[in-house]
Length: 302
Image (tube, rainbow, N blue to C red; front, side, top):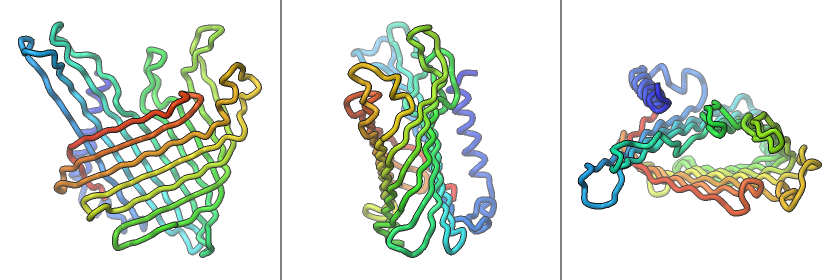
Protein backbone atom coordinates (compact mmCIF):
# COMPACT_ATOMS: atom_id res chain seq x y z
CA UNK A 1 0.00 0.00 0.00
CA UNK A 2 1.41 3.39 -1.02
CA UNK A 3 2.36 5.83 1.74
CA UNK A 4 -0.19 8.36 0.52
CA UNK A 5 -2.96 5.79 0.72
CA UNK A 6 -1.94 4.80 4.25
CA UNK A 7 -1.84 8.42 5.37
CA UNK A 8 -5.28 9.17 3.90
CA UNK A 9 -6.74 6.09 5.59
CA UNK A 10 -5.16 7.06 8.92
CA UNK A 11 -6.45 10.62 8.65
CA UNK A 12 -9.91 9.40 7.71
CA UNK A 13 -9.97 6.93 10.59
CA UNK A 14 -8.84 9.64 13.00
CA UNK A 15 -11.64 11.98 11.90
CA UNK A 16 -14.27 9.24 12.16
CA UNK A 17 -13.11 8.21 15.63
CA UNK A 18 -12.96 11.77 16.96
CA UNK A 19 -16.38 12.67 15.59
CA UNK A 20 -17.83 9.50 17.07
CA UNK A 21 -16.48 10.09 20.56
CA UNK A 22 -19.00 11.29 23.14
CA UNK A 23 -18.37 14.74 24.54
CA UNK A 24 -17.54 13.45 28.02
CA UNK A 25 -14.70 11.29 26.61
CA UNK A 26 -12.66 14.34 25.67
CA UNK A 27 -13.79 16.83 28.25
CA UNK A 28 -10.90 18.77 29.75
CA UNK A 29 -12.61 18.89 33.13
CA UNK A 30 -12.46 15.09 33.46
CA UNK A 31 -8.68 15.27 33.61
CA UNK A 32 -8.19 18.60 35.34
CA UNK A 33 -6.25 19.90 32.35
CA UNK A 34 -6.99 22.89 30.15
CA UNK A 35 -7.10 21.19 26.76
CA UNK A 36 -7.39 22.59 23.25
CA UNK A 37 -7.01 20.78 19.97
CA UNK A 38 -7.73 21.43 16.30
CA UNK A 39 -7.52 19.09 13.31
CA UNK A 40 -7.38 20.59 9.79
CA UNK A 41 -7.55 18.81 6.44
CA UNK A 42 -7.18 20.56 3.07
CA UNK A 43 -7.37 19.15 -0.45
CA UNK A 44 -6.93 20.64 -3.91
CA UNK A 45 -7.34 18.80 -7.22
CA UNK A 46 -7.31 19.80 -10.89
CA UNK A 47 -6.98 17.67 -14.05
CA UNK A 48 -7.02 18.31 -17.82
CA UNK A 49 -7.86 16.11 -20.79
CA UNK A 50 -5.01 15.32 -23.22
CA UNK A 51 -6.62 17.54 -25.90
CA UNK A 52 -6.87 20.57 -23.61
CA UNK A 53 -5.68 23.74 -25.41
CA UNK A 54 -2.77 25.10 -23.38
CA UNK A 55 0.18 23.89 -21.32
CA UNK A 56 -1.57 23.68 -17.94
CA UNK A 57 -0.82 20.67 -15.77
CA UNK A 58 -3.16 19.07 -13.25
CA UNK A 59 -2.34 19.10 -9.56
CA UNK A 60 -3.36 16.94 -6.61
CA UNK A 61 -2.46 18.32 -3.19
CA UNK A 62 -3.55 17.40 0.32
CA UNK A 63 -2.40 18.51 3.74
CA UNK A 64 -3.34 17.57 7.30
CA UNK A 65 -2.53 19.37 10.56
CA UNK A 66 -3.09 18.51 14.21
CA UNK A 67 -2.40 21.12 16.90
CA UNK A 68 -2.96 20.30 20.58
CA UNK A 69 -2.21 22.13 23.83
CA UNK A 70 -2.52 20.68 27.34
CA UNK A 71 -1.72 22.90 30.30
CA UNK A 72 -2.38 22.81 34.01
CA UNK A 73 -1.41 24.56 37.25
CA UNK A 74 0.02 21.48 38.96
CA UNK A 75 0.42 23.30 42.25
CA UNK A 76 0.79 26.82 43.58
CA UNK A 77 4.42 26.75 42.43
CA UNK A 78 4.37 24.71 39.20
CA UNK A 79 2.64 25.17 35.85
CA UNK A 80 2.90 22.65 33.01
CA UNK A 81 2.32 23.46 29.33
CA UNK A 82 2.60 20.87 26.56
CA UNK A 83 2.24 21.59 22.84
CA UNK A 84 2.02 19.02 20.02
CA UNK A 85 2.10 20.00 16.34
CA UNK A 86 1.79 17.38 13.59
CA UNK A 87 1.67 18.15 9.87
CA UNK A 88 1.91 16.04 6.74
CA UNK A 89 0.97 16.60 3.12
CA UNK A 90 1.75 15.45 -0.41
CA UNK A 91 1.45 16.70 -3.99
CA UNK A 92 1.25 15.08 -7.44
CA UNK A 93 1.55 16.64 -10.91
CA UNK A 94 -0.19 15.49 -14.07
CA UNK A 95 1.81 14.76 -17.25
CA UNK A 96 -0.74 15.23 -20.03
CA UNK A 97 1.59 13.98 -22.78
CA UNK A 98 2.31 10.67 -21.05
CA UNK A 99 -1.15 10.55 -19.46
CA UNK A 100 0.41 9.77 -16.08
CA UNK A 101 0.80 11.36 -12.69
CA UNK A 102 4.07 11.89 -10.85
CA UNK A 103 4.95 9.99 -7.70
CA UNK A 104 3.67 11.69 -4.52
CA UNK A 105 6.12 14.28 -3.18
CA UNK A 106 5.98 15.78 0.29
CA UNK A 107 4.88 19.37 0.65
CA UNK A 108 4.80 19.38 4.47
CA UNK A 109 6.20 17.09 7.16
CA UNK A 110 6.62 17.97 10.83
CA UNK A 111 6.56 16.38 14.27
CA UNK A 112 7.01 18.97 17.00
CA UNK A 113 6.41 18.37 20.70
CA UNK A 114 7.43 20.77 23.48
CA UNK A 115 6.91 20.57 27.22
CA UNK A 116 7.56 23.54 29.53
CA UNK A 117 7.50 23.39 33.33
CA UNK A 118 7.37 26.87 34.85
CA UNK A 119 7.86 27.63 38.53
CA UNK A 120 5.25 30.30 39.33
CA UNK A 121 6.85 32.25 42.17
CA UNK A 122 4.84 35.44 41.59
CA UNK A 123 8.06 37.31 40.86
CA UNK A 124 8.95 39.57 37.95
CA UNK A 125 10.09 36.46 36.09
CA UNK A 126 9.58 32.73 36.65
CA UNK A 127 12.25 30.01 36.37
CA UNK A 128 11.51 27.26 33.86
CA UNK A 129 12.81 24.03 32.37
CA UNK A 130 11.74 22.73 28.97
CA UNK A 131 12.26 19.93 26.49
CA UNK A 132 11.50 19.83 22.76
CA UNK A 133 11.35 16.98 20.23
CA UNK A 134 11.51 18.01 16.54
CA UNK A 135 11.47 15.60 13.62
CA UNK A 136 9.51 14.52 10.54
CA UNK A 137 7.50 11.43 9.64
CA UNK A 138 9.61 10.27 6.69
CA UNK A 139 13.08 10.90 5.26
CA UNK A 140 13.97 9.67 1.76
CA UNK A 141 17.53 10.97 1.38
CA UNK A 142 19.05 7.49 1.00
CA UNK A 143 16.40 6.29 -1.45
CA UNK A 144 14.85 4.10 1.25
CA UNK A 145 12.31 5.57 3.64
CA UNK A 146 13.60 6.32 7.14
CA UNK A 147 10.85 7.04 9.65
CA UNK A 148 11.18 9.83 12.25
CA UNK A 149 14.50 11.12 10.93
CA UNK A 150 16.37 13.40 11.54
CA UNK A 151 15.70 14.21 15.20
CA UNK A 152 16.56 17.37 17.12
CA UNK A 153 16.28 17.34 20.90
CA UNK A 154 16.47 20.60 22.85
CA UNK A 155 16.67 20.96 26.63
CA UNK A 156 16.77 24.41 28.18
CA UNK A 157 16.43 26.18 31.53
CA UNK A 158 16.19 29.86 32.37
CA UNK A 159 13.63 32.56 33.05
CA UNK A 160 10.14 33.06 31.60
CA UNK A 161 7.71 35.96 31.65
CA UNK A 162 4.14 36.59 30.49
CA UNK A 163 4.41 39.90 28.63
CA UNK A 164 0.71 40.19 27.84
CA UNK A 165 -2.43 38.35 28.90
CA UNK A 166 -6.05 39.28 28.19
CA UNK A 167 -8.53 36.48 28.84
CA UNK A 168 -11.45 38.39 27.28
CA UNK A 169 -9.63 38.64 23.93
CA UNK A 170 -7.82 35.31 24.44
CA UNK A 171 -4.48 37.07 24.07
CA UNK A 172 -1.26 35.73 25.53
CA UNK A 173 2.34 36.73 24.81
CA UNK A 174 5.02 34.59 26.42
CA UNK A 175 8.81 34.93 26.38
CA UNK A 176 11.60 32.66 27.60
CA UNK A 177 15.37 33.15 27.80
CA UNK A 178 17.74 30.47 28.96
CA UNK A 179 20.68 28.17 28.41
CA UNK A 180 20.02 25.39 25.94
CA UNK A 181 21.46 22.06 24.87
CA UNK A 182 20.71 20.60 21.43
CA UNK A 183 21.37 17.19 19.94
CA UNK A 184 20.99 16.70 16.18
CA UNK A 185 20.69 12.99 15.29
CA UNK A 186 20.64 11.96 11.63
CA UNK A 187 20.66 8.37 10.36
CA UNK A 188 21.14 9.42 6.71
CA UNK A 189 24.48 11.27 6.60
CA UNK A 190 26.67 10.54 3.58
CA UNK A 191 30.28 9.70 4.46
CA UNK A 192 32.44 11.45 1.84
CA UNK A 193 35.21 8.86 2.23
CA UNK A 194 33.25 5.61 2.11
CA UNK A 195 30.31 7.06 0.11
CA UNK A 196 27.96 5.22 2.45
CA UNK A 197 25.18 6.57 4.62
CA UNK A 198 25.72 6.43 8.37
CA UNK A 199 24.35 7.84 11.61
CA UNK A 200 25.74 11.01 13.14
CA UNK A 201 25.01 13.01 16.28
CA UNK A 202 26.14 16.61 16.84
CA UNK A 203 25.68 18.39 20.17
CA UNK A 204 25.37 22.15 20.56
CA UNK A 205 25.21 24.27 23.71
CA UNK A 206 24.21 27.91 23.80
CA UNK A 207 21.55 30.50 24.54
CA UNK A 208 17.90 30.11 23.53
CA UNK A 209 15.25 32.81 23.16
CA UNK A 210 11.60 31.83 22.58
CA UNK A 211 8.61 34.16 22.20
CA UNK A 212 5.07 33.07 21.40
CA UNK A 213 1.97 35.17 20.70
CA UNK A 214 -1.57 33.77 20.64
CA UNK A 215 -4.39 36.21 19.97
CA UNK A 216 -7.66 37.00 18.28
CA UNK A 217 -7.20 39.45 15.42
CA UNK A 218 -10.71 40.84 14.93
CA UNK A 219 -12.95 38.32 16.70
CA UNK A 220 -12.87 34.70 17.83
CA UNK A 221 -13.16 33.53 14.20
CA UNK A 222 -9.82 35.05 13.18
CA UNK A 223 -6.77 34.04 15.19
CA UNK A 224 -3.01 34.32 14.93
CA UNK A 225 -0.32 32.17 16.49
CA UNK A 226 3.26 33.40 16.04
CA UNK A 227 6.32 31.69 17.51
CA UNK A 228 9.95 32.84 17.25
CA UNK A 229 12.88 30.65 18.32
CA UNK A 230 16.47 31.91 18.26
CA UNK A 231 19.34 29.64 19.27
CA UNK A 232 22.87 31.02 19.56
CA UNK A 233 25.37 28.17 19.77
CA UNK A 234 28.45 28.68 21.93
CA UNK A 235 29.74 25.10 21.73
CA UNK A 236 29.84 22.48 18.97
CA UNK A 237 30.97 18.91 19.68
CA UNK A 238 32.31 18.60 16.10
CA UNK A 239 34.14 21.94 15.90
CA UNK A 240 37.62 20.35 15.89
CA UNK A 241 36.73 18.30 12.80
CA UNK A 242 35.43 21.26 10.78
CA UNK A 243 37.64 22.77 8.06
CA UNK A 244 37.43 25.27 5.22
CA UNK A 245 35.46 28.48 4.85
CA UNK A 246 32.37 26.99 6.49
CA UNK A 247 34.04 25.84 9.71
CA UNK A 248 32.69 28.82 11.71
CA UNK A 249 29.17 28.78 10.28
CA UNK A 250 27.85 26.99 13.38
CA UNK A 251 28.56 30.13 15.43
CA UNK A 252 25.80 32.08 13.62
CA UNK A 253 22.37 32.14 15.33
CA UNK A 254 19.66 29.75 14.13
CA UNK A 255 16.23 31.35 13.61
CA UNK A 256 12.84 29.65 13.29
CA UNK A 257 9.86 32.03 12.98
CA UNK A 258 6.45 30.58 12.17
CA UNK A 259 3.15 32.49 12.00
CA UNK A 260 -0.27 30.96 11.42
CA UNK A 261 -3.42 32.95 10.64
CA UNK A 262 -6.63 30.92 10.90
CA UNK A 263 -10.04 32.17 9.80
CA UNK A 264 -13.05 30.00 10.69
CA UNK A 265 -15.69 30.52 8.02
CA UNK A 266 -18.10 28.09 9.70
CA UNK A 267 -17.72 25.49 12.43
CA UNK A 268 -16.19 23.04 9.93
CA UNK A 269 -14.74 25.28 7.18
CA UNK A 270 -11.57 27.31 7.59
CA UNK A 271 -8.89 29.24 5.71
CA UNK A 272 -5.31 28.91 6.91
CA UNK A 273 -2.31 31.10 6.03
CA UNK A 274 1.05 29.83 7.29
CA UNK A 275 4.43 31.52 6.89
CA UNK A 276 7.73 30.16 8.14
CA UNK A 277 11.17 31.75 8.02
CA UNK A 278 14.23 29.58 8.73
CA UNK A 279 17.86 30.62 8.98
CA UNK A 280 20.63 28.14 9.64
CA UNK A 281 23.95 29.11 8.08
CA UNK A 282 25.16 25.50 8.18
CA UNK A 283 22.27 24.57 5.87
CA UNK A 284 22.20 27.69 3.67
CA UNK A 285 23.80 31.12 3.94
CA UNK A 286 20.48 32.76 3.04
CA UNK A 287 17.17 32.61 4.84
CA UNK A 288 14.60 30.03 3.70
CA UNK A 289 10.92 30.99 3.43
CA UNK A 290 7.74 28.97 3.11
CA UNK A 291 4.18 30.28 2.61
CA UNK A 292 1.03 28.17 2.44
CA UNK A 293 -2.54 29.34 1.88
CA UNK A 294 -5.13 26.60 2.21
CA UNK A 295 -8.85 26.14 2.69
CA UNK A 296 -10.47 23.01 4.02
CA UNK A 297 -12.30 21.38 6.90
CA UNK A 298 -11.52 21.85 10.58
CA UNK A 299 -12.62 20.00 13.70
CA UNK A 300 -12.31 21.25 17.27
CA UNK A 301 -11.26 18.30 19.40
CA UNK A 302 -11.68 20.11 22.73
